[in-house]
Amino acid sequence: MSFTATALDGSKTEQYEQLVQQARALVDGESDRIANAANISALVYHALPEVNWVGFYLFDGTELVVGPFQGQPACVRIALDKGVCGAAATTRETQRVADVHEFPGHIACDAATRSEVVVPLYDGDTLIGVFDLDSPVPSRFDADDQAGLEAVARVFLGSPSV
Image 1 (cartoon, rainbow, N blue to C red):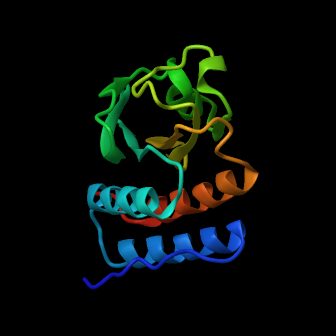
Image 2 (cartoon, rainbow, N blue to C red):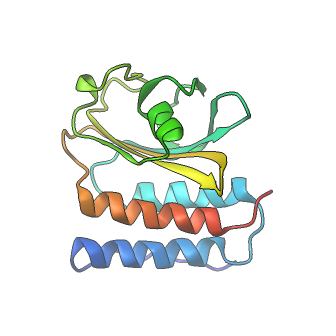
C-alpha cells in the first residue's frame, strides 16, 4: 500500500471532505477492521489540531474496550452506563461535550482533556463501538467537526468486519 497524507486546506467543511477521502484511501481493499481503526486513528490524530486523543472503543458484547488509538494510555474498559462514550453507545447519538467536567459521570482517562466528541458506531442494530476524540481545549468541537467526524466514522463502518 502506498499512502501519503496531505495537509488539509480550505474551509473546515472542505478539510473534512479531504480527510474523508484520505480515510477512504486508507481502508480501500483492507478487510481487517482493527487495521482500519488503527490507520484512521493515526490519520485523524495527525490531521486535526488541538486533539490529545483519537481512537476507538469496541463493544465486546458487555462493555466498551479500548481499541486502536493515538494519544496517552487510555481507560481500558468503559461500561455502557458510564461517561461520554457510554452515553454515545446507549443513545446511538453523537455526544459533543464542550466541557467534560460538566458532563455527569465523565471518566477522566486523561486529566488534560477538556472537551470531547464521541460518535456511536452501529452496523444496523448491532453496536460495534464508538469513535472518540478528546481535546485539551474547551469547546474545541463544533457542529462542523461533528459532521466531519461522523463522515469519517461512516468510512470506518463501510470497511468490512474482521
